[in-house]
Image (cartoon, rainbow, N blue to C red; front, side, top):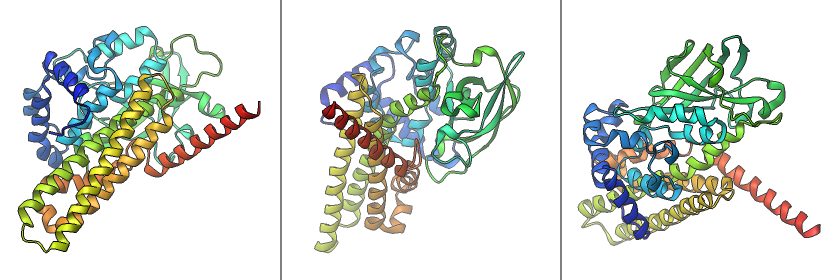
Length: 403
């Protein structure tokens, strides 16, 4: 278990989890117990659900107004929780049930009745997932260039297109799917639809064969004349001509990038601790220079982990204050994924390939680290976003100074 300097918030989190029947130590112990099997199979064993409060997990990202726990709703609490779960096993942490990335666009775009109906699906004692689908093949990082179309018909809308790399996509009860009604209007032609997994024309084409984070099951989804009813279009009813559903996708990224970054931070802290224990057991008689190099690696890793954690907390704090967090979320994600790769390389340098095979936790971390840079936007894209947002802020400051 990782120990943070944020003792009081962590104590409050522990008390809240215990109060709702989901003690943190029990949850992390279950994740660690089933991590190896989930990595081998890409599936969550039925025995796992017998160890945890399934309804509590389902409601983990449900707003308090719709049955979620108010004590777990603030983003700072979620960041603290996901660091702990990432320490236990990041793949299973990302594979837990609940609405997941569907929550922010539902809150931003859906009517009250739509929210009520969709969030009610998670009031179950068996695992229920929601999905979020915007990424498409051959589009790259420009999500506004999506090709999935939605065409109005008498009974609703026909969706056609393909989505890829959809976390928990094969498990989802419904998927918030972004499609364009009018390609000529760019991002202002994009709309979001809640597509049931049972909708005619909807198909899970395949699960990707993954190097790491296998339990999260990235799926390819196909929409082939997929018929959805009129009320599947997420709309509050007060949208104007310039309605921008893409802002709902941005709200998902702004919300989830600190959460993912905290998960990465937790996994990095676990790798550091496991590496220290491994070296203490296997290199007690190593030459002085070798021990010094290893100690330098561990010390550097500790500082980088602390910096990554602070970036997550800053983004979460700004989110709770209602401030813009796009830049902070991207900074947290870019830095956390980068240090994961650096620590992974340090692990390989310190223990060698044979050592990795002897230590399954470190071996999984090495594979998982390769995936962190890609999830929720590549590191290069995050750094580009940070640079552009910084330039916009500088330009806005200049205009303010002039006028």
